[in-house]
Image (cartoon, rainbow, N blue to C red; front, side):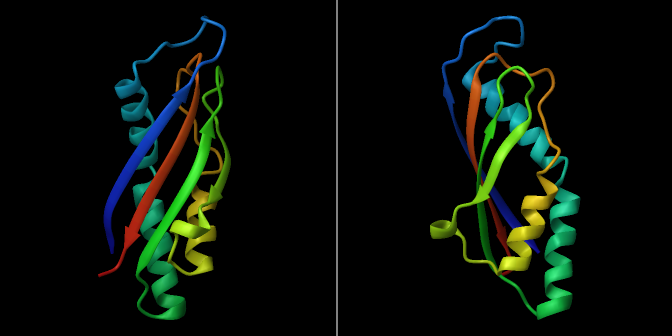
Length: 120
C-alpha cells in the first residue's frame, strides 16, 4: 500500500522568458500534480512487487531535474542512501517517470526529490 508522499524542490535560475514563470510554490504544485497523475501506476508497481516477492515495505527516493522550457523530467535516479525498497520496485518507479513533463515548461530549471513510502 502506498502510505505517503513527500515532495521537495529547489529552483535554479535560468535565462529566457518565453515560457511560464511560476513561483516556487506553483512550481512545486505543478510537479506534484504531474507525479500524482501517475499514482495509480506507482501503486501497480507496489502490487506487482508484492506478488513477486511477498510483503514489500520501505521507500523509494528519486531525484530528477525538470528541464527548462520543455518541462521534461530528466536524469531521474534513485537516491540509494535514502531508499530502502527492493530493486524491482525502485526500477518500476523510475520507469513510470520516464515520459513525464510539466506543461507549459518553465523558464527555470527544477531540481526535485520525491519520496514514495510503501507498506506498513
